[in-house]
Amino acid sequence: MHGKHYHHDHDDHHHNGSTHAESAGAGHNHQRPPGKVAQWQTPHRGEPPHADHDHSEPDVDLVEAAFIEGFTAATDPTSFLRLAHVPFEIDLADGRKFSLLRVETEFIADVGAVMPHLGGKTFRYDPLPASHVARRRRLRFVYFDGDALRPLTLKQISERLVR
Image (cartoon, rainbow, N blue to C red; front, side, top):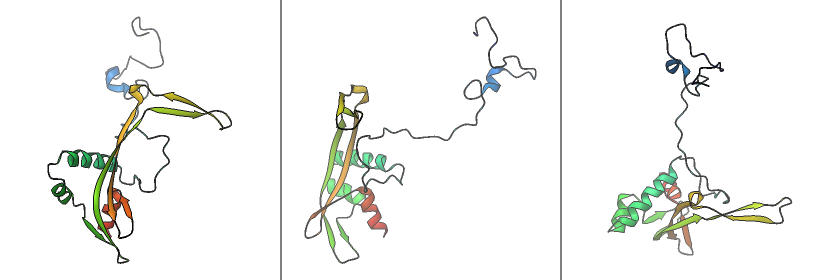
């Protein structure tokens, strides 16, 4: 107890003249060097990882969110795409050409959770309270290759431009 100053597992009485606040450090009882700054993001549980959703660029989701915000507010979407260096046509090494037809944004809200019962044949379902609902947007650029529609992510487009 600090109020009556009973004995506890750290020493408030320093003989070198320093105060407790100067020497306590992180964790009050144990000094630790400052940790690395981390960016906290909500994991999207329940979705299998997509091959096209690689997070080697740590902020790709933030870049996509900023793109969606700007694109949806743009009075001239075509000019916005030009400013963002999104190609209207992509020439592939094999001679095919991709032509941009549309930009799709999808709003996703995870409002429930499932937990498998022992054995995995059945599951428990729980609706999530508002504070646990995960909201996110998905961005796709839909190109036509002459035969079929090809949805690409922002990361896939930027990789094609670098090659």
